[in-house]
Image (cartoon, helix red, strand yellow):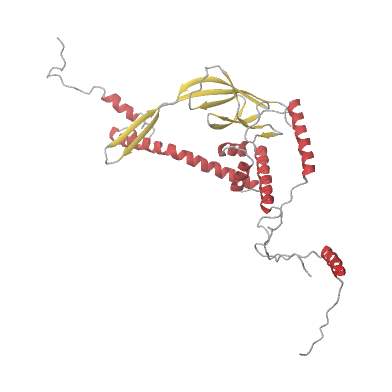
Length: 150
Length: 186
């Protein structure tokens, strides 16, 4: 005979309340004040801590990129270039190092960073010369530059 | 009408040209008035002579080739593109990637996408990658584990909405054994 339901005088009692509480308190042990001991306060603090860490994981990427950009800008100013021209000229010279690595090079390999800055500076000057072109005027245009003077 | 005689200095045209050339050689005249737009806003740029520059480049390449061939470099570092990330790497370095690598523990791996190699005296910058016959970066797979359980909690207050997700990523740890450079620059 198979009995599918328990007898009516059996009560369902929670026997592992201690471990359920410890599961939450173990994340709160390093907190300050009563929220590292008292379950009611700890539950709220632990939940807020997890939510903040979830959101911060997305912002960490933005924050680190801004940090790298600041560091690269400061290092390139030491070599006479600004950050936008440094990065744009490096990309135009087909050097595809990302900002994390360039920031590490600026800190730990100063000679290499100096050579990268020189490369960017040279590409910048070539860009200026290319922008000026031949110095000739397009044909058939009446311009204010006087060509013959008597 | 009354004709007023006008005195005009008569000069033969050839004399005018000669005089003007001489004049302009000694006193160059700006044919454009100096305004804010008559010259570009950047300072004037002069590039070095291309022939001399080519000689200088060839000499530099020969010297660096000589250094590499003679082995006059200390510790080499390289920037490697691996697992969709760029790493600045030396020998005896540990690298941990957040995904699975299809190689067993103890397998030796060669990393092919090298962006930069440097030593104390020279750096080789790839545009964007360096040649495979120029650099060799070797690594060994050390361990394959899982990350610590990352907890994602989404919570909205007063709405009875709480979702918890525990994510465990597979990780692989590699040790960079050697970085070698070969003298095949040109």
